[in-house]
Image (cartoon, rainbow over all chains, first blue to last red; front, side):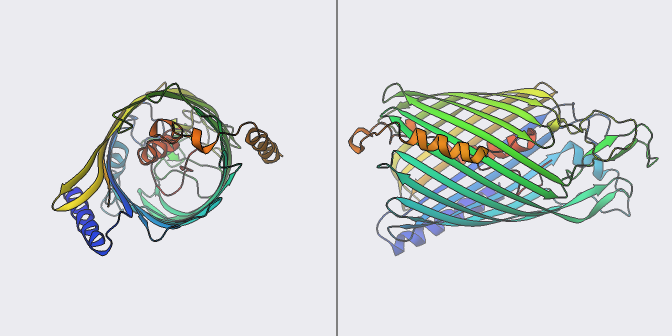
Length: 384
Length: 68
């Protein structure tokens, strides 16, 4: 709660300062709070034999957009999160007095960008940082957008680069290891087309190349020959040093009337670890109060074929092996609803907040290999 | 080659309709946005990219987080 209070105070003071500098509306701010809880006992990758994948995450996010001039907008997205995980606690209990245990379970991250908007095209660039006790990341991104045929067709190209480092947990020494690096490059190409005054169609292709240490920080596998001689017969998972991933996606948005619409989306994914998946989502959209209230219930279906080196346990040590349930064969169902409402101009703490609004969201996800999660979201937003 | 086919497909789709500015009242409403809850979906897509083997089709590409 201290973090939330600090963020709100900072937000209000910053907006008051900016409002004194400029009379007209130039910025948007949004504070979004995510509360996530995950449960399930199907985690063969977990160090302890109870396989508990219980995780609770609390993550506030702050978004600020500010227009410097007619064509230029700068934006910031700042994230704080804190979590507890059953798997971390189990490792912590096994680190011993000489080992370095699990450190502070929190993450701080930020992404800062600039966008330039011209009549028929726009570009943007950004950089980001993220830091945890056993993980750190630098990222760079770009975006180029072209608008064609009187803005009926919009083509976007977005490259991203992540320079990540993580400390794996050394099960043999029972302590956290040294930082190891990985590089992730991604290219996203998408196009959206107006099909009619009530239909939009979007296509996309994403290419992701990952290289370096791709082991998950604390995942392990059971090997029957027990090469380390520890009590659990476990060794660290061994991932390939490279992963090449492809995703083709499409989304159709249709408005039946000014108050009622729907969307359908589909994604086909495959990679060189032999993971293949189909993702489909359907959502209804209801708009009330002259577009001030939007309600969107959704259902998402996910079907996955496992990685070629996945198994629940191994007879002997293999060059590549994982028991990570996230890379197994499963189907997933997610049900959710988002609601947003704009209350209009409000004065809070003597500051004029234009188009003040709030949004709420709840989700439940269930996976066939014994994992469920619940997510609650709350936000407030305004112009200044 | 797949990229080439995708670009051809996008160009074909691009030439199939022309909605005039004056007819875009509904299109510009929140009801018709491709992703009307864009900020809310960031955390959701991050969760999906770690709880599932797939990524792509959104901003989440599996970097920037040590999530297990």
